[in-house]
Structures are given as C-alpha cells and as structure tokens.
Image (tube, rainbow, N blue to C red; front, side, top):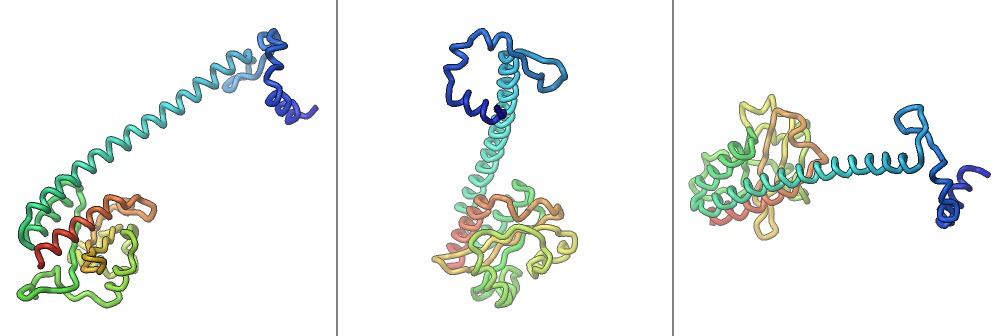
Length: 217
C-alpha cells in the first residue's frame, strides 16, 4: 500500500486504534529534531508543545498590536479634543501641527486648501495648487502612502523637502467635495509605505476637514 492510502484508511477508520490499542504503545516514529526514535504518544506531546508555542507567539503579537492601537487611539482622542477646542484658523493649524509632530512624531506636516478667504493671500496654506494636483486629490479614495518620487507635494515642505523619503497624502473633504490636502513627510523611507493600514490617516483627514471647514466659514 502507498503511504497516502494508509493515511486515508486511518482517517476514515478511527476505530482502528481502539481495536489495536497495544499497537500505539509499541509503535515508534522519528524524533522531529534528532535522529532517535520515540513513541507516538511522545511525538504527539511534542507536536502539541510546538503548536502551543506557535499559539503563544500569535497571542503575543495580538497583544502587542492591541497595545499599539490603544496608544494610537489615545493620541487620536487628544488630537480630536484639541481640534474641537480650537476656534480660529491659526489655532486649528497649530493644534494639528503640534499633535502630529510632538505626539505622533511626524517631522514634516504641510496643509493646502483650494479656496482662500479674503485676507489670507500671504498664508502658505492657500498657495496656488495646480489643477493636476487638485485632480489627483479628488481621485483619492484613501490616503496615499509611499515614495515622494514624481510628486510635487514634497515641495510643500520647503527647505526640508530634499531629505524626505516617504510621505502620506490625505485628501480633505467637506460635504463630498475636496477642499484641500494634508501632506505628511518623513526621512524614513519605511515610515509611510504602500501596504500600510490607513484607517487612522482617514480619521485624521476627517477631523482636520471638519475643523478647518468650521473655522473658515
């Protein structure tokens, strides 16, 4: 018989070892980590220990992810409270920049808004943005994360632009229409990467959109 046939037979006839219980005590199999042989019972114990170690490793990863998410949630809460309390355009910008740089440790933050109110001509947040970039922002269904290569957005960071290696671009919307964009930059090429989760970046965009739209009205 082929080994596959034996395995198939044993899977479909679990009563086999009940009828031949003494066989379990006498059968030996190779040890998974050495050349000696061991009993089937000992081999099962080793398999269960290996499985237990794997489960402990996965549990440790889940606990770590949970702790990291809790920490991020607390930071997002502090940012949300600050944005709600801010009652002017400058205070909203200050709150946004302060929390992103000091709490989230994002070294470079830039904001651009499409429609400038009267008296704001000198503010960099209302500097002209090309139609191409506005179209790009309009088409974003979720934040873009990745390299700065081929993007004009890196120029928004001014003199800090050359060393920036990764960025996150978040479209801001009010009532369905795009009103601007937030650009986050880092010298670390792996800080913002294409496969990273964007749920917190999306929430950041929603909070900033609501706060800025409120004070600009």
